[in-house]
Image (tube, rainbow, N blue to C red; front, side, top):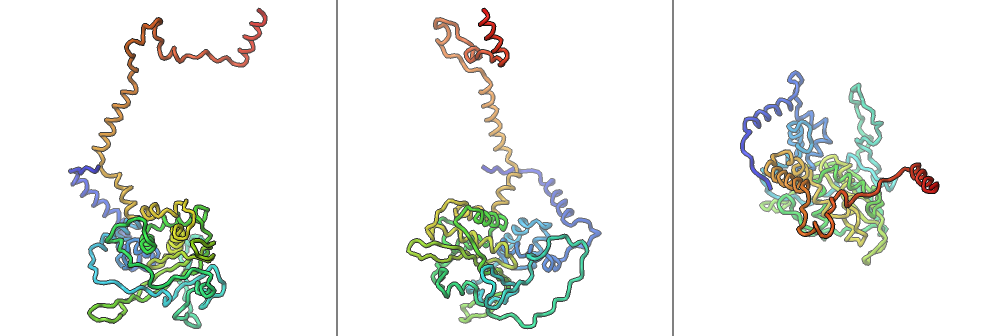
Length: 395
């Protein structure tokens, strides 16, 4: 039960003033520009776009600055703004095989068509704080440009029929989770939509659990790629496809062993992850959880938390989770007073002596007090027990 509480308007106004002052910090220090956040905190900007479900780097940077770096608050701000935007159409499915790759690696094959492209990554740093800001080195351009169309690494396994095949056009029309409620059991398209806007930390924990034995999972990173993908629409008034821009995406395909079942031969299976911007850890976590959630489809034992779709999908949203936990800070005076009154009544009843039933006292012998009824002979120490035994023998 939630009870509206009136009052405190002046105190709230002062609190908002203090928040604005604290957010700005020392006025002698120049204020952060949105371009600085967008260019130098790009991974934070990407996370806010992912979980805010809105691809706009400037708005994500504004949300980060307004939230003073609190990512969950920034995500909430971006989602709230998103609800005010008009919707005028849907894009065509993105073709990630035509991605203009900035980074592309595979943990399953050393030599892959198009080659391994390390790109910008923290994987090979020593994780030491750099106190002296070194000048940005000039990176020489590559001797030859990367291929414009890089085939998927998993096509190598597909050519030998060693991995499950995904037939295009067989997926049902996906629902829009921003407009329709989540129901269970959810199909894979709905699950992926939920995971793509889910909290990165939660998904990382779920993915980690699958690697520690809490699921039938032994994954390999088949391919991870990051780069720009063109976005196209087909307006009804035009009747043909036009490109309206490009966005940066990170895509991950995990490979898992499958021993066969339900008439399916032994083969590798897939886990899929796709995120806005640079979000490699999020995409990998999403792919691992996606594969774990396919346990019923593949007739695998369903016993781990990451395999329980209602548990995973109902708790993945950072805005819902943060709101429900933090609402405990708001007034619950009436609820608490009701529980406090009940507890005082129960405590008083517990402290009162139990009533004596009529007719129990005076049945041949006086009623014993509870302490006398439960009395036990005193315990003697081993030395005292030996002395008592000697005295008895001596007599």
